Amino acid sequence: MKKSDVEYILLTGAAGFIGAKTAERLLELGYKVVGVDNMNDYYDVSIKERRLKTLIGDDNFVFHKADIEDYQYMKSLFEENKFSAVINLAARAGVRYSEENPHVYMSTNAQGTLNLLELMRKFNVRKFVLASTSSLYAGQQIPFVETLPVNTPISQYAATKKAAEVTTYTYHYLYGIDATICRYFTVYGPAGRPDMSPYRFVKWVLEGTPITLFGDGTQSRDFTYVDDIAIGTVAALKNVGYEIVNLGGGQKPITLNEMIKLIEEYSGAEAKINYQPVQKTDMVETMADIKKAKTLLNWSPIVSFEEGIKKTVEWYLANREWLKNVPV
Image 1 (cartoon, rainbow, N blue to C red):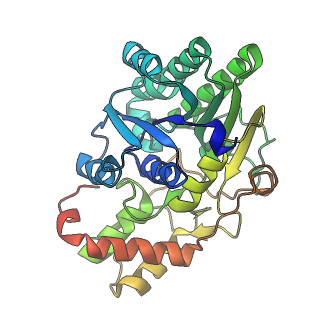
Image 2: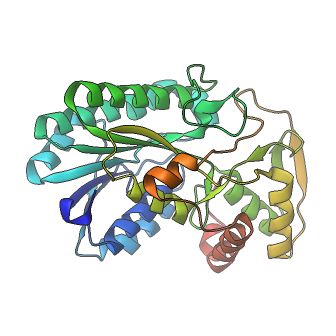
């Protein structure tokens, strides 16, 4: 999709980790963005508020504190704005927390997505980008390719994302909505989510708190820097019909032990580790096959894990005073 074809973008989850970076990218490219976020307290809201501060000063960004589960409020936004596309990054995230609150996850991730698609149908908005997850590939052989069957999710979180994906396909099939589903692989970087291991490990190492490590640290992840993810998400506005695309590092996965060593190197502090049993919902390893992203979206990640984790440590050190009181 060319920029000239798109004027107003509805971006949900705009105060989130990926959402705020995606908003920045859209604004840099000249799009007008209507951002929506319910500002829930899954993690400390002050981080979301600081992300928003970087956006609200831009004349092309308008923010609404709202929930995609609120059909009537979302309908009012479609009535007030002629959207050319919707990027749905609003979601309940976190595998472990989903086991405790499955209804909340299904309501936001599945019902919220349905609300947006139905409003797109009614208001003739033709392009949809959906954030999905590499968690769907549990039990498959690496590297994970988009054509693998993902019909046996092992967490409530993954199950709700699968529901969102198949609902999106139905709206493409029945009503011709052009849809790109982006399956993200372990996104990290400055101002990240406090429940994610990169943020937690940096904080714990720098504050001298023992790292809670589930397993022996040999489990690996295809970490992907947030700026790269934002670039890929905006690239997904391209008209494709219906496609699922992996956005991941696409190289050798990084073990948690390797990440801890890099944090020690860049912070000058020594990690203390509190080993805990592996969680049933944890995946042993993830690795994206990103050939499709390269050919379809002309996208590949730029930032190496070493560079990205260094930037994350530097960001934490620069903001250490207020981050000390942010719980993880």
